Image (cartoon, rainbow, N blue to C red; front, side, top):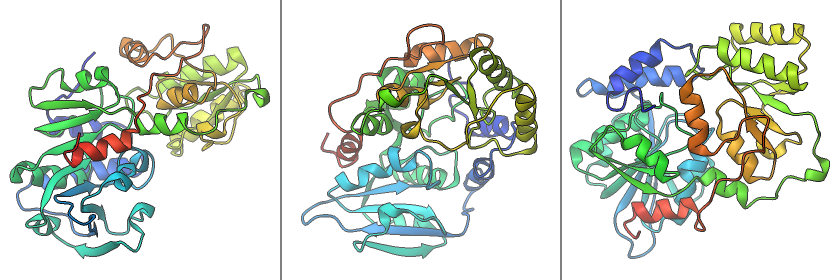
Length: 353
């Protein structure tokens, strides 16, 4: 199954507005449409600027919407490998450790595009243009004729946001790149791999001697791609049949999610506290469709996917990433490139790769 909305951000936003709210992301999604109106720019930005090494030319612009989650792993990790000048655009009030050093200057601006002009920007990169900062950056780059890139930061589903026009996607794999450009003729693909998985492979492996037998199911009631009844039924059936614990997802905080948790508890399902990262787990992991399964496999932790009654596209998703369903061997670690993705991203942006 291909992308539901391969080109139109407006149609994707319309679909997104019909889904249940995800804290922060939904509001950012609504704000993202504002730059579509001519000369309308949301107020409150900060430009973080760093000079490059002596003799370095060109300037890379990074647009950052969310300071948490996959942003540091997928985007900001490239900063230490950049030799030339760099500029990072954020909303006011966004704190990033990566731009807190003495080499960085910080300037509050109302219209960042005015500051872009004459700054010598030779490439831009974001996690996409479905949020406000990314949208502004890509619209400016398209008008100015500056090469633009989007770095993949998660596993892809058919409901992923469409890429901006005339963009290079820095993909985890050839399959992911093909998934993005299947219905597009304006998308280039460079395969760099996953920074998240690369980092996991270079950290300490899980201590299997201390591994508990009882698995944990990672809740995904916050996944907007599926009606909430499906992840609830999947969690309920698996946890009761396998005696697994249930770990709530980070977005499972609204009234409906709390009601679902109460239902699971009434049915005898025990809970593990939410927010436990994959690297801190000491149990086999089971989920529906999550990069956590791949990270667990990289770290040597047994991991599976589950959902025999989920739509066919979910099973296609499992096959594309090599995720193994419960009842068989655990998911194998995906192949990883020898070079760090962050280094490759920096080289691509600076034109040395």
